[in-house]
Image: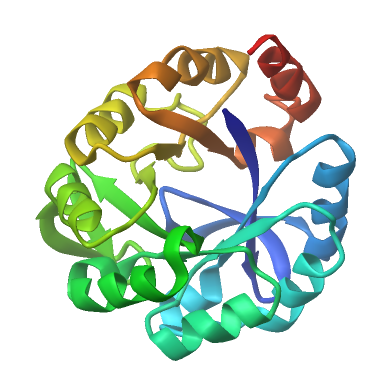
Length: 242
C-alpha cells in the first residue's frame, strides 16, 4: 500500500479545495516545491500533483513548477489536471512526471485513453471523480452522465492499469474516506484502485490498509496532512507491518 501526499497547485501556490469548489480554497504554501521536499523528507514514496488551473483551462498551466518538482525530488510523481490530448500526455511525461492521470477525457474520449495506454502502458492512470456515484468532469463542475463503476469497467476494457477514485462530496472535508465505494469500484473494474477524498486521521489509513485485499492499493492524503489531523510519518509507520 502506498500513501500519496497531494500537492494541489493553483496560481503557483499549494492549495486545498473543499468538495472541489474553487470558491472554497485554502492556501497552505506559497511554494509547492517546499511541500514536495517536506513530504519526501518525511518518507513519502510517491507524490500526487494536481494542476487545478489546468483542470479548468483544459490544458496544463503550472507545468513549469511541476517539472521542477519532478526533477528535484528523488521519488516519482503523478499528475492530473487538464491532460486531455496525446500531445499533452507526451509533454507532461517529458517534463519528468512518471504517471499521467486522465480525468474528463476518460468520459469524453475513451478511444484516446485506449491509445494512450497502448503507447505508455501503466504510466497512464484514470481518475474517476464522483458525486453520489456519478462521474464528474470539467474540474468536477459537470456531471459526466455515467456511474463510476460502469466507467471503471470501460476503462479496464481499454487497457487502463489503475484508477484513482475520489468521492467529491468528501474531498477536503476531513469526513472520512469512502472505503466501500472505492472497494466496489475495484471489484467492478478488476484493476487496482487508489482511494482519495475525505481522509482525516489514522483510522482512515487503517481502514484502507484493511481493504488492500479488496483491490485498493493506496490512498491520497491532502488536507489532513496540511492541517495536522494526520501525521504523515505516523501513517507511514502504520504501514511498516505490511
